[in-house]
Image 1 (spheres, one colour):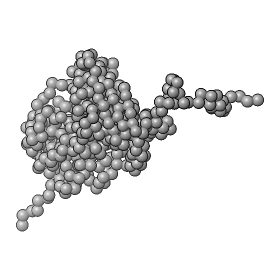
Image 2 (tube, helix red, strand yellow; image 1 turned 120 degrees about the vertical axis):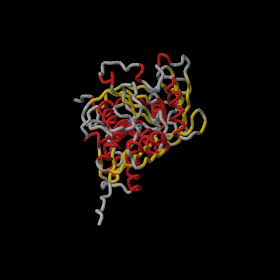
Image 3 (cartoon, rainbow, N blue to C red; image 1 turned 180 degrees about the vertical axis):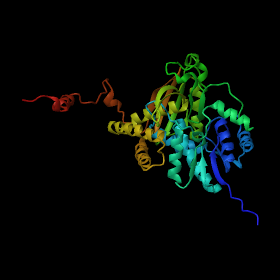
Length: 400
């Protein structure tokens, strides 16, 4: 009798088509795995088309390459909740990369089930945030899946060593780029690091930026964009009804032209180190500003104050990879309840790297001109202020 061949364990690899994950395919295959490359489109604007990436993955040794267009889901199911919550990590990072990771993890888990795979893999490094975001999400969604992280396990310690490995093994890899920067891009923004940015005293060189015009070279005439919201969701741009994803794409283009959305920050990574990060997020910057402005018009002071605290915790949950958790679900319910009156229009002026809300209106506006005015139409009872002041200061006055 012929010996029974042991069936290879199937693994679903989050595949980008880049150097790391191309080497991952070969590395996993060499260790006896049957590799299915899984590539998602979240608006990363890949220079090569997906058919090229598919051919490369197969040439690297993958059994097959699965490609999904998840841009709409990314916008509606991940970006929109974060926008409604006002989630901005450490007051600066608009969470573009962080928001895409739970989506990718969910799609990986679903693909593993469909392909009857027992393992999933990713190309994240051992000191980044993404390994946590993807692995925690996968463990919540399907604890039975075995998770592999080749970059944490292999002996290669640099990009050059990976390229040498690829050359020895005849692995087809993307053309070598002259850029010294590491990039991660999607619909909501682009993250830029490495190279001269690793010294926090260095101003980001002009060539580091990929989307936005240098504000000094931006148009000398401002643009105005009017965004209409319905219960916290952007539904119209300049009076025209558009899908949310189209609003994002349009504002990215318009904002970038005016140099809007640049962020340079020292960021606290989840693994305990500080990193210098540069981001470009024109649409995210404009939409967060407009949304917050409409909330200031339609929500009362206590609700605004409490929601700001929720926004900070919500941003930490996203950043820390805790999207699929009970606390996140509870926060979503609260945030959604606050958005019932966040309906109206906000006009934003874009000029020389700035985005400034200049006009706003809503059928649920709490602003009353008759109380705020200093004209003869003033209905505010100023005599009542004396009693209010006496009571307000009462706890702080020393009494005999």
